[in-house]
Amino acid sequence: MVPHLITALSGPINELEQRVLDATPTIERWFRLEWMEHTPPFYSSVDIRNAGFKLAPVDTNLYPGGWNNLTPAMLPLAVQAAMAAIEKICPEARNLLLIPENHTRNTFYLSNLAQLRRIFHLAGLNVRIGSIDPAIKKITTIELPHGESITLEPVIRNKRRLGLKDFDPCTILLNNDLSAGIPGILEDLHEQYLLPPLHAGWCVRRKSHHFKSYEEVSKRFGKLLGIDPWLINPMFNQCGEINFSEGAGMDCLSTNVDALLGKVRRKYKEYGIKEKPFVVVKADNGTCGMGIMTVRDAKELESLNSKTRNKMSAIKDGGTVSEVIIQEGVLTHERMNDAVAEPVVYMMDRYVVGGFYRVHAERGEDEDLNAPGSSFVPLAFADSPHLPQPGVKPGASMPNRFYMYGVIGRLAMLAASYELEATDPQAESYE
Image (cartoon, rainbow, N blue to C red; front, side, top):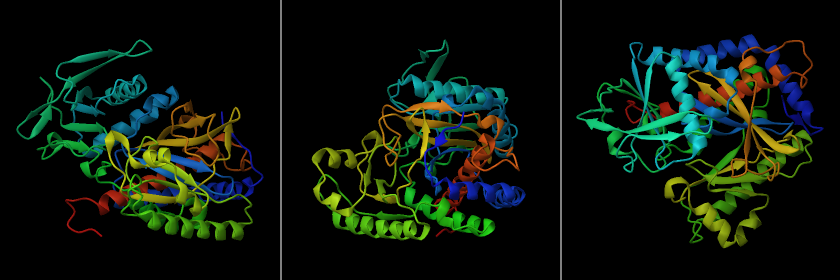
């Protein structure tokens, strides 16, 4: 199943699809060479928007949940990718400790953990789930909706290693994005591989750093294909010192919103696009669809109501928003049963392993879909992300559309590897 595009402006996307298909050997070689120089994030997911005239990532998550939303057909691909990733990091690995988010009894999230456990078990590892949540003081088993159960065990810190009772892992996989900060229990581990590294957590990471890296990647990729990088890159600005509840820093926000809207208008005029430009203001760190608003005119910022100010002030785990990224808004012209939809691409190591459509019946094409009320429709990515169909008319082939999404997802993943290298505290030097 592939959502239909409801726009007359699908011509440019079809042209981009054709460029990508024609250049498949060149693209795959380019990625191969990049991965010889750079280490991909252990796993990642990328939210993509298809406007018909532009296709771009709008968010990259380095601690992806939602593995339970992928089609069962993707499991062999994910297992293979997990094997490749583990082999590269720790070939002799036997035990893997999976560390989840704290304070969660959300069965959707726990089903995601069960799927991750299954993937790594099939990849040949003993997998147990160890919680760093202080509230988990004893072994806790939770029943899941489809007859499965999940067991959370309190972690034990022993000298410089982390494990469970009678379980000493060589690899620790975080599925906790560290929004609340880096817990001391995870620091200074000895001879254990912690994946992803601590500086990938939202307490350190910034979306503006990521999209700066993505801008660099998109320019190089645009040159490779002979396309305008703007077709795959959302422009952005950033504001550093802002306080929504006190109204501080609003001049900086207003100036940057106005400047970015002006740049987008010029691009729309260049391409003959009649849509109304907009930008998305969001917290420069954090996830879960918190601290996000759509702005079509800088004047809107002069009269933010208290509800919007409160919404923009906080992110997950009670964090306060002081830095924002102002990102060019990318419409989503994809529809599934008349509801707005956007693809989310999942990757492990350097491989696309699946994806789904995030669908929201109550949101508009210029709004964030990662919000209560969204649902997930698995994609048949497993059949197609690496197997495009040359010669098929652009826009008509599900494998070709998904291959194109996989290329954009991998560009964002490459940007994440640049970003992590640049912010690695153990690197000898970084910019």
